[in-house]
Image 1 (tube, one colour):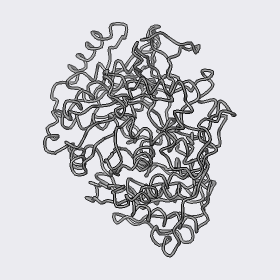
Image 2 (cartoon, rainbow, N blue to C red):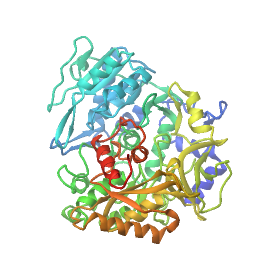
Image 3 (cartoon, rainbow, N blue to C red):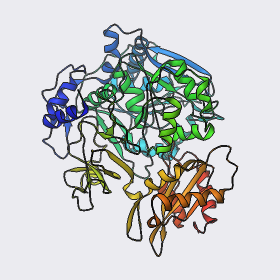
Image 4 (cartoon, helix red, strand yellow):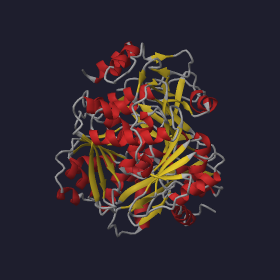
Length: 629
């Protein structure tokens, strides 16, 4: 089947399309239909079916005779540790933890917060919750205490599963003091905590509340899988960058299983037994969809990597992992490749490893600039697929379906919509715009299975945030255009489209031009307030390692590139050079904060920032060009 036939088949019979996909999932009660629209514009998928996410991810593979297949590869350069867990071993670990939770009173519908680093126990914790129908909410390990407290008060968990510490390249991050402080700050108090003690730092326990991970499982009967309805919440995931009242994305179980399983073959082109590596973190949506659930549901081996693309120990770490574990498909953020490219611009380290097992690279999480894609294609000699999706959607909105057919690549485009997504470009009044014209990217309702069902305890907020701007559409918050072939170009967040003297301009288009400069490793463009023009584009440049030319000269060349390739209309005249860009821990550039610094307005350090000190560096650099006063 070709992509157009597949997409047309979904358009002509959406319910039939998804019911066919649902046949690949194990149901204890088979659903009678896919879509339930009686509460539109709130939709449910496979609502009258019954299933269990843990059974689909673990037990059914054991029951099918594949218990000896490796389910999880743990690779931790920061602890110099590698290990493997088979599906049979994973079943035992998960059933034991689920049994211990059950013995402590955790039941279907109860919430459990998981606050752990990138270790196999984090996956075990998620699956143990799913096994008994508990709703897990994974919070990025090491998250600030006050932000963890906010999530405790919103999710109101009966239990918190945590580790004693996380490990960074040059330091140990103590989790337990942060957890203790968060519980003290929160109005809601969990019934108990279970702490996995790591050798690198053991935590002090509070009698009566805290239990040792191993001890509280001793002598407890393992738990069986508990069937849940298709609309039962699988998890709550709070969107990154949230402050104040967080937005808890709710993923319903039935559609979550169907969509992720479908995507593993059709999008990523992997088969059961292949090694799939999503180089992300369990605290982010990629970790939920493509470290934990997607690969395991599909019978793949998943890699849990505790390290960084550079510095653990060098820019060859990714190639070493691919070689050692025979990775077939790698999925990571463009920022990881920009970091590798900056440390090893010529890609010399690639040649030190045998990466012949690698058949594709997928990039997502932010715009993949053409220069990074071209570098990866040249060094890896595999298809490099930029695909676009969101925490809210849980899987690809737009991509290149390698498991169906490899469509022609167009630099700068994540390619075409996947089945279930009717993507349209709308103007401010909600009317479709012409091909090639910039507008708001919206998706005609209903969204497909696997996307957010609602926000936790906040249905009105869900409607207001996503469903009210354009009647009958989900608002993505991104801006872009579609060409005459139906290829989507995601240019910026809607609020990153700047208005310069009446001209709507994409900061993403300018970033593409700047990234093409041979000395620029990474860049960002923001719109700073300008009394005359409304907004003025300001560039931020990070240079490749080993560049010795003067920053002023490079800035001048970059200004010339924008003038040549976009035109004088961009009014791009100023840029600064930084060692690094301010980012969230998931790699997203904090452009909104940079705008506030440039404009001299108040801002709050976001909870998800990788290193708050970088904001001072941004301010210092901007003052040299007369901004940030």
